[in-house]
Length: 125
Length: 196
Image (cartoon, rainbow over all chains, first blue to last red):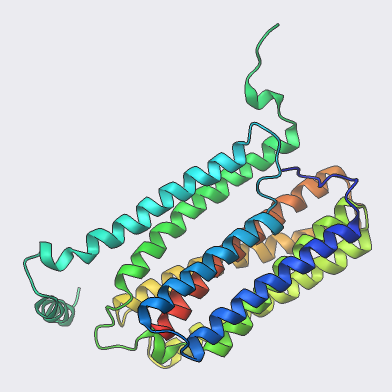
């Protein structure tokens, strides 16, 4: 990745690249929007579909606008990004995993837990 | 032949850019924690409103469009600066600022509407998570807009030099990064909130 995009790529070419990136990015957002508003899917399928769209959007933004993967070896930035994404997945997925089993670990049914939480809430902090 | 440290072999510009990337990636960890918290607490509405009750999909769509467009204009502004098109660069930077302000204004209006209706961050864990996550992003946007303002202020008189362009390239990195974070907020907070 170069801080100064190489001079030989013309302004018009870069402009076209970004216009194309913007069109694809907006299209993905519209598809996500209409799939939610018009109820295209059932709950589980919708979750998977939205996450897939977000992942696609994420990749396009990284490649088109952030120029990831264009730097020369050794690719410090790319490896830092991949490492951080790995850490991010651990933080997010593992947290969800642990907390999904929280009711079980607390020895309560979800209803009992809800009741307990509301009771605590009423007591204030 | 002496072996120099790999970082010494990098151009100064490249090293600055890598350093800025490392800052952004540490910011990713901050947002990861906030996302994890929000996702865990998003059903804990404690008798208060859920996402589907308080989010307006068309409003969020407009907000997202504003941010995506401002990300695009920022990219074009840097490209113009790289090609020494000063007027073009300034024009696109102003557009970036305008769309960024539209985004921030819409977010603040949403917040004040929610608070006005009594849906504050104290109502439920869901709303605490929501205001913290979206508010932290909005705070970053605010800082970005101030940073952008300094460019517009200096560019009135100064010509585009290498130093200026380097700083501008860091700003666009920051701005695209906020766009990336917003994509996940759009999906996980708003679309999941309305659809699931």
